[in-house]
Structure formats: structure tokens, C-alpha cells
Length: 220
Image (cartoon, rainbow, N blue to C red):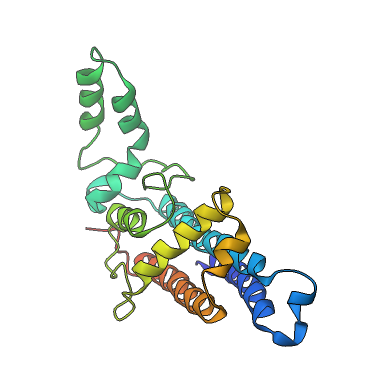
């Protein structure tokens, strides 16, 4: 069901782990050739990429699976209506003053008990702009109506890890900091702990979406 997402997510995570493992292997004597802090700083970008891939492609795959169902509008979780009527909502937001009431009528007139769910846009990601952090993930959870806790019980530290990862990735990827500067701020142990937390959370996200589809949590 989500096997392709899981496989590609794992590959991205393993690339990050390879980079961190190289820095932690003293037998390679990296300092004789180049500064390992550059690699540690670059690990933020790779790890963030794995996280972003995981959640966005869980969303895309879920939309694909929902589009394969013949669903009635009044049977699905009302929060999903934001995805289902995304085009209509966008037209309402962009329409001028003279069109607003006409567009409202057209939208709400469709919402009958016999209405079937139309095709949801494949590449929709229901969140605000910005790096993937607690707020962005919360919006995804709310939009789909996932019943699993957003954060795995006992792993609340991941909120702090998400913030740390986003800040590190932004600093390096957008050139605000050199990779070597960011890499100096944390030890190998710190980076391993960050990796382990984010890697575990990626697996948790996939499990939550798998359960969402298997248990038909999208139905009222």
C-alpha cells in the first residue's frame, strides 16, 4: 500500500546515515583530507529531504488511493472537503467582490447527500508554506482526519528535533551558514540522536497513513 514510499524514504535516510557514519569512523582519518564538519552540516539537508519526501508522498499516495474509491461526499470526513473542493475554494479566494456570492452558491449547491467525491488533485499538500515542522504536520493531520496521534506517544522530543532539523537545513541550504559552521555546532552523538529521532518519526508517519487507509478513517 505504502511500500514504495517506505522504500524510497528508507533509501534517503540511509544516505544520511552513511554520511554521519563516515564522520564518526576515526579509522578514515578524514581530517587529513577535508573537514568532516562540512559533511555533518550537509547531513541536515539530506535528513530534511528524507522527512519532506516521506510526509509529502504519504499524502500523495493517500490521495491516489482515495481517488480509486467511489466515495459519497457525505460519507467522508468533512475535513477532507477542503481537498475535494480545492479548486472551488481557490476560485472563491481569487474572485472579485462581484463574484463572491455567485461562487459561494456554486460551491455549496454541489454539497448534496447524493454527490460523489470528484477527483482530488494528485499533488496537493494541505499545509502552509515553510519547512516541515509541527505546524505543517498538524495541518496535514487535521485535513485528513487521521485518528493516530500526530506524535508517537513517548516520543514527544521529536517536536524539538523537527525544529532543529528545519533550522539547520534552512541555514545550510539557503547559504545563511556554511555547512562547516553548522557542523561544528553539534557532535557526532548529537547528529546520531537527531537522525534516530527523525528516522523513527518517518516510519511512524508511514504507519499512521497505512492505518488510515486500512481502517477507512476517512469515513465518518
